[in-house]
Length: 101
Picture (tube, rainbow, N blue to C red):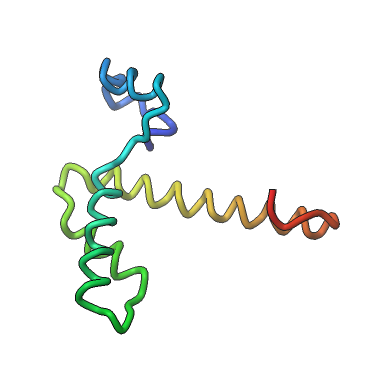
């Protein structure tokens, strides 16, 4: 499960997490942080360009083992979310509406 859909096997949010969510603070995961760092590194070392997958693989390899399951959940949710957004955009186009909501 992800931080968006709680998993009963995980501990409830800490007081700190609750305060962050109540004050609309963004939740940055370990994977997001390492993904950003990997992208910066690749931009500096591969100015000719690289595949986006290289960023994700580098970030994932650098994650501590204990963070990898949550990162996979995050990736799966992101894939699903993008797919749903595409479906909604295509449905709006098919209905004669705008492509962006």
